[in-house]
View 1 (cartoon, rainbow, N blue to C red):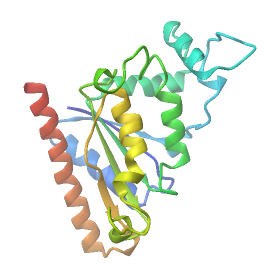
View 2: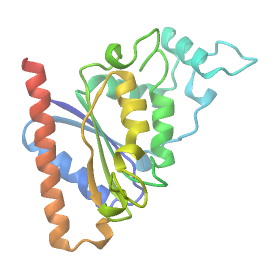
View 3: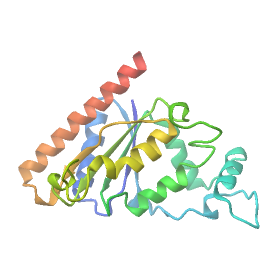
Length: 222
């Protein structure tokens, strides 16, 4: 199985860092292929504009989707964007690893989506949802929060239900492009956990990844 992890945390020693390292070690030990894009380490530029392209459709007016389609047809994406697109096409499963910031993706990860999920590459010409370009791929959100689990309860949570907060990503990015969005893996308030509890959460993540692999293999063999 081919897994692509997009990692978005600026501190390598963070619990997000530990989750990504655990995923890489665990999956590789089972013979799976893993590629990681560590966005901060890469110095990823989240700004989406003409720097995405080496081609130009309309020099007088930047219409993003028009330029994306033109670049798709004329091999005109900037090398750093094309490299991420190639990883996205390559994988069987996509994992976003990030801390929940302001109830959403960190800017660097949102900017990665804006630049890489281009029209003509990830969607277009009616290829969305059930007919999406990436049908057959799985996608998993693995994230940490600052608040405790009860703050994100579906009913009565102070911050609102986590499924509602993650809906724009799961439904608006993953499912929109044809992927199957899996239930998220969430570690609530890792800063408050003891070393033993952190170890237990990493073990729980390994079990979740085993489930991801099992579902993918089952789909491939069906």
